[in-house]
Length: 90
Image (cartoon, rainbow, N blue to C red; front, side, top):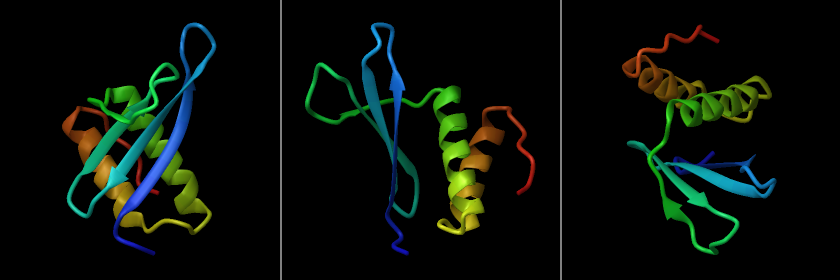
């Protein structure tokens, strides 16, 4: 598995269209980008607590299927702890 990890998911916005979110691990930090349905470019975004929780859920499901090392999950858990949210150990 490569050290650069890219994970994507989509969310529905108010009018029912999908916007895509991409989280990229570059061996030091998570970088988030957003593709809004109106634009064609990936734009940088500031992740909210909900974004971090969604990423954590996505990574945990990949970890359970043995498609992701636990260290990536722990980096998100550490960030959530900084934000005041305590997660259970897998």
